[in-house]
Amino acid sequence: MLTPQQILDIIETLYPQIDELNVWITSDLIRRVMARLGRGEGVFLTASDEWQLEVYQAAGGHLDAVQREIKRWTKATDAEIKRIFEDAGIKALAYDSNFYVEHGLAGIELAQSESMIRLLEDTYQRTAGTVHNFTRTTAHASQQRLLKALDTAHFKVASGATSYTQAVQEAVSSIVDTQTQVIYPTGHVDTIETAVLRAVRTGVAQASGNMAVQGMEERDWDIVLVSAHLGARYGDGGQNPGNHFWWQGKFYSRTGRTPDLPLFVESTGYGTGEGLCGWNCRHSFGPGDLRHNPYAQFDAEENKRAFDLSQKQRGKESRIRRTKTKLVGLRTAIEAAEDAGVKATLEAQYTRTAKLLEKQNLDYNQFCEDNGLKRLSDRIQIAKWTREDARKSIAAARSK
Image 1 (tube, rainbow, N blue to C red):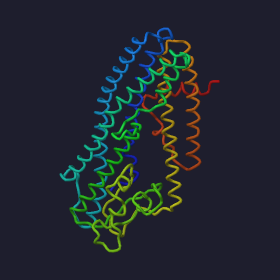
Image 2 (cartoon, rainbow, N blue to C red):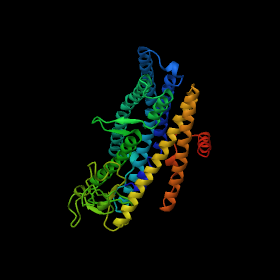
Image 3 (cartoon, one colour):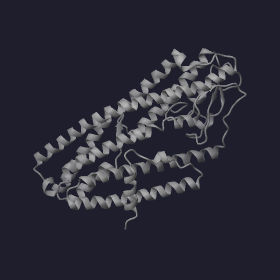
Image 4 (tube, one colour):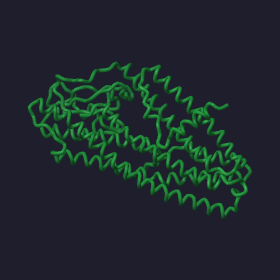
């Protein structure tokens, strides 16, 4: 069994890796946009067929570059995901093994159990495969962002709908305001951060659950203890698997042979997306004995408040990271701009965005202080955000 905090902490190392890819793609898009748009209006308004050739060359170059970067990124991310699963497996089995030994049964050593290693490897491979499928769509989605930004800018200027400077600014904004995306087979779109973190967190929970069930089946153990944490999702508030607060922190019967205990799968929805060890679930489970339950029962209102606060905190952290990514993109655009008017316009946009970041940071700090929450510095950092970036952002925010 893993604790909810272990499941939360165990994937923290993925944040900087996901940010690294997001920042890289944003910067590459901006460089290619500015190479076509930032050289001045006279260069920009070339003949239609020449413009289309430039656009397709840019789009093709970006697609190739992103695919190469994703290949490199995937190799590094695969290694990190594998390490995460191995760490989760060791920690989950440590709890279960100690429990069995205390009850006179054989313990479990991951390195010595072929069945547990196989379960862990199978879940890791499925999770890594899911991440690979996501990132295959990322390159094409990014290419479409570039094509749309370039064609829209050219059309607006050529038709007289907007000025050249405004068109460039809007093209840059369309890139920096949109995060790197993945597209599901259903057509649903998510940010790469949401998709990857959900897949890995869910995979870790499923691996822990699969190993817990295997251990209980091998020892014919019936009683199951489910973990609990303050801020569990409450769904519609009813007594159903979608209401994690309702079933957390309790004992269940795995097989139905322990009197007076509710059935494990039916009560918790284990094995379904909305239930225990499903989408983004931080709960885990393991063998129990009806005597020892370290998980406190929380007041329903207190739990709802904690859940709502955690959602608000995650939202504020995400917005700060997005704003920092925008600033990196705008800095790249400013450095690439050859037209003085475009450069000045982008510098003004950078200043406005820097002021927004300062406001967001102050708001985040005050929110955490007012609600007794820990300020999570790692959650508001992004890759490629250097001390120089921070210095420039602060200076711009405090300028008139």
